[in-house]
Amino acid sequence: MTDKQAPSLIRAIWNDLKTVGRLPLLLLLLIFISSIAVVLTTYNTRHQITLRDELLENREKLDSEWRNLLLEENALAEHTRVQRVAIKDLDMKRPDSDKEVVVNLK
Image (cartoon, rainbow, N blue to C red; front, side, top):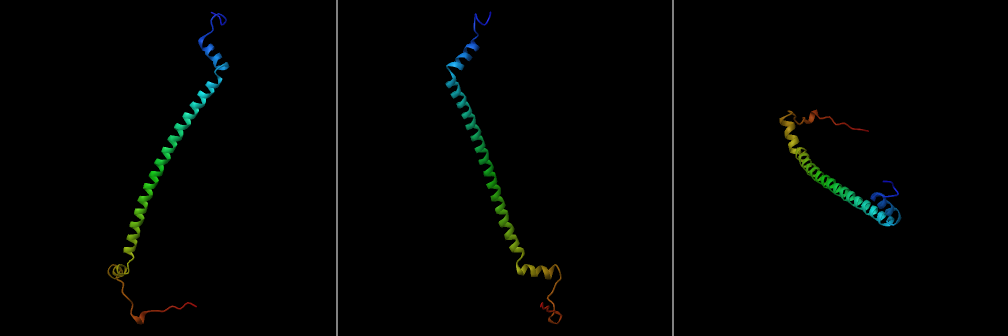
């Protein structure tokens, strides 16, 4: 069999696509590219939404921890507590008035 006697089916389809079917082939290619772009965009969007949700959850945890730390700081810095710790744990006492020294800066 030679090419002149029996053209192959693939060659006949290719010749048809080159001559008559250029526009449908181009449209099919554009549809395929467009569908791939839609899938990739959807995937990226979902991925970004998931990341955003994780970050928001992390922010809420950090805000809660920050509020707890502020409450703890305020509780530890109360004047009565500081005075109690100074007297009880550190054996500190208020100096007598004759032992006080006043420093004046000029």
